[in-house]
Image 1 (tube, one colour):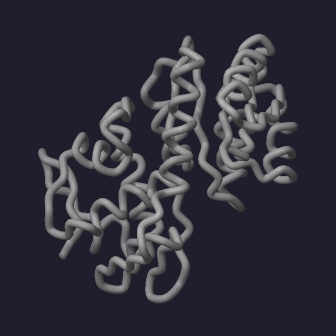
Image 2 (cartoon, rainbow, N blue to C red; image 1 turned 45 degrees about the horizontal axis):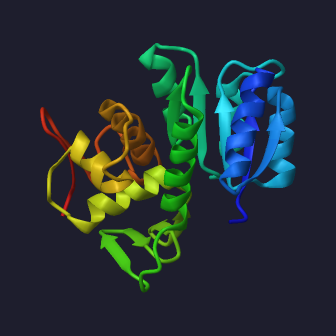
Length: 226
């Protein structure tokens, strides 16, 4: 296992604990205790995943997430002491793939890291191309195009879109969509799927307010227009 994990956490004891557990799990770990330092490492070291605390000196975690997403689709797991759902949703809307709330078990964080990286790596399935109108998703290449133009998606957005495109016309509840896209062990709050769908619509819909592809079925969930 050669993946590099960047941990951006200003509480030194937590950063060391997380580093130790991730290194014991076989990962190469970089640590930054300031947001600006973390952003610099993210740009120079190109880690395979970022574990990002929201409350940081130098540069706020949400702003750091926004800056990273301007040039990279690296998976991001947010770590926050904030209990408010709004903060988690803001992070997800900025492109984070998952979140974990302090206090947390280091073993749980390692499990989340493994789960997200598995989604990024995907399986060894043969090439497969899914289509819906002008939208095309290449499973093997982990690539999406709209009218022939590449669309940059986070790993979570890609997994959700792939799930919808595999069953056009089927209505998924939020929980079903999360379980099928991210795995049955996913423990995130199911309403966070709304944030990911909002991001997807911004990227693939000609008019996100009047979606053509991902349709809301009120009181139930979402479906891909067949």
